[in-house]
Image 1 (cartoon, helix red, strand yellow):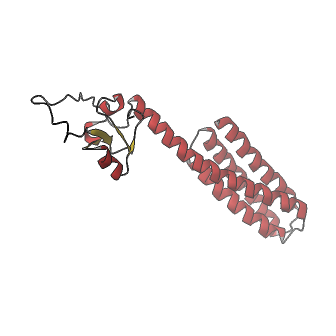
Image 2 (cartoon, rainbow, N blue to C red; image 1 turned 90 degrees about the vertical axis):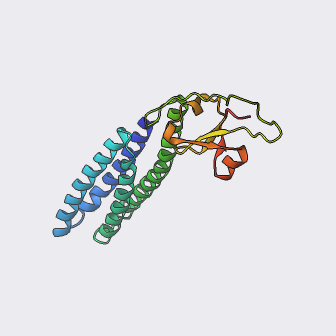
Image 3 (cartoon, rainbow, N blue to C red; image 1 turned 135 degrees about the horizontal axis):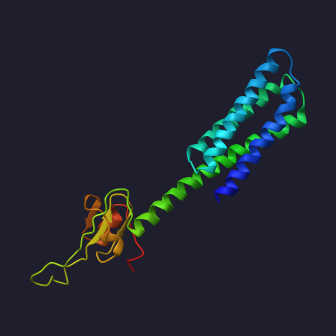
Length: 198
């Protein structure tokens, strides 16, 4: 998945820069030197962003968004000095495509991180120290079944609640544990049931 993202982001960056090079070389005087420096800076910045995508860093998509927006503004300004419309159109299209692709991946990365966190918690791995606490029933007289409501366990780090005998509930760190007196109590506080609850 990340390999494909890296290739697409790199290709869009490549097309944006390649389409801009002839436009920049068509300028004269001080504008030519300015655009030459800009091409080199953008090339380095796009390489940094591509490295971030390859390393699966979230900041790389934010950098890509900024780079494509600024690069598109640079292309538009340079167009007034060089009237190569076909290269201008290719550059702008590449920048718009790159910007939209960056926004899409930024959103899907947030969902990916959310899913990765839930997988860790379901396996019992949390960022904090995991304290396994056995939940045992109260000793003494049996509860009145007419007024008794089953307790549910939730975590301050996630928005789902579990039955007390759920393996995931037993792995919730003591400092993060929330006990709900009823299912409706948990749902009223924005928690949703875990797959351990039927």
